Length: 279
Image 1 (cartoon, rainbow, N blue to C red):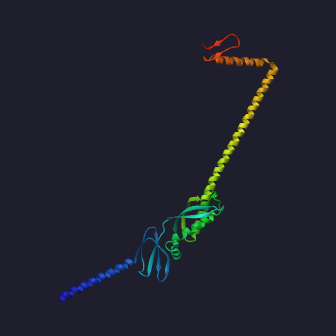
Image 2 (image 1 turned 30 degrees about the horizontal axis):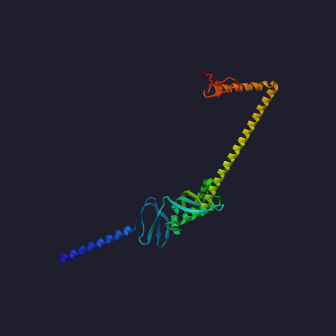
Image 3 (image 1 turned 180 degrees about the vertical axis):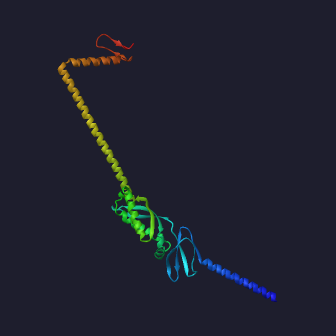
């Protein structure tokens, strides 16, 4: 009987010890939390509220039930959003903006108080659309292409300044896509066609002007040639004309005589058939 009571007492002590160890392990596990690399933690205390101190990487203690940790990712993350904005000349433009953002580490408690863990999704699309509309409204539609670097710089400066109000750091801001509405695209196409027609008309006019000048030069040359011939005729009499006629006749005769298929019938009784002086 005594041995059985001792066994029951031993088992009871073991059960109590195991229970105590289990409770202790549970309390210890709930008292520890780990902050991984690229993360920071903010503690919420049920009596003091959000503690104004950012917890760094590593394993840390907290008071179970009384305190709770909230983990923030402080690595740079990309965000992309689109906006339809109106230009200065009342054209609608579709723009896509890409930003690389991260929270300001020392201001994480304030970010948690005002915005929560999803601070970037709440803030960036809103201020991005606001800045894009404000900047695009300062330019005409065609200036967004011709002055794109200047537009991008204005968007970057305005957005960085605006995000700083919410304790968000922007490492990069870029306009990745820009397109116009259907009406403006048709207007641009019609303008290009009109410019091509204007260039073609300029070419036709220039060609006609060149032809006119060439005709004037030819006419002046012919007039000068006629004048020279007239002066030579007046000086030498009809002998020059007769000499030119004889030279032309000689050249024609020489050319035809080289052709075996030519039949030449002179005015006199002489007849020369198939004359070829080259034989």
